[in-house]
Length: 343
Ligand code: AQP
Image 1: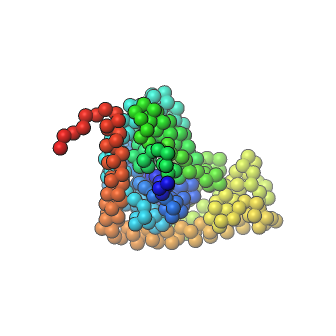
Image 2: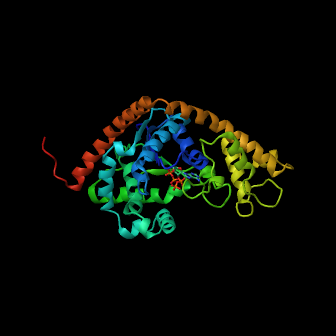
Image 3: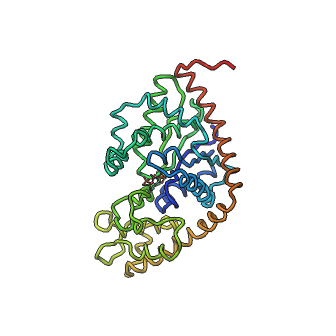
């Protein structure tokens, strides 16, 4: 069996990734490079499903790339690229949209949440078909199907599980209708960090677009404000440091973050902090997050100073990705029945 493949993407929609992105997905991107053939993309086509100022989008696309490199994505081992640089993403998305039911797409909870928040006048058709483009992003990088096909994984947070299910359904439907074309991908979701929650609203997902600044911990955040956010994190009125999702969602979230960052586990932390107050846990956690993010922030700033290098890395990544995507599309076009182009 050949090397397993992995594919994932992230939107360049903010001036920084956040702790949820880092623990839910990006740390896994870095780890999986060791024993997977990896394709990682900055999904700018997804970003424009919500209005973006052009110059800001360009700047944030570079910033996203620099942060990924600073976290340890290695362009020599992984294809790191910008989604719009590989045109096949849009082409496959159209074909997959033609085998997706309208009602099926309408059941996506992320669309329902975002469109309710924005109102129907501000909601684009692109936001509705977002999960189909995501399916295309993934399936373009399918390994060759068949008995010896390697595993095909997608590291994401819990919020993406439903979209991944749709991708699996579309892969199976296409295979059934047109013949074996795609390996059906699997979600790679780490249970303990699948949903990092907002520091001010600890039952809600920490989110670029939904969290207030006080509830979101940015990778690019300066140490002072970062420390303050942890010290002001919402907890319950009790004193015991114990995980309890129902009764103590705030403390449970802080413990999950600490366990992930210091490679311990929650029972061990409960023991370590027995008899100590919430303040001590918050203080220690702020230090731990700063120790993790400060070098990433400094490396990001250094990488951003060299535009040419970033562009060269992205060109190399797009070249690698396009090689695989073009092959997949040749098969897909033929299976669907498009007439081949002469010459
Ligand atoms: N709070 C979270 N906990 C765990 N994982 C998370 N992810 C996002 N938030 C959390 C994972 O990060 C990856 C990249 O996300 P994205 O760029 O697609 O952004 P998103 O899911 O849209 O993240 P946000 O912050 O919630 O953005 P908005 O508000 O724009 O929707 C994904 O793998 C995601 O699961």
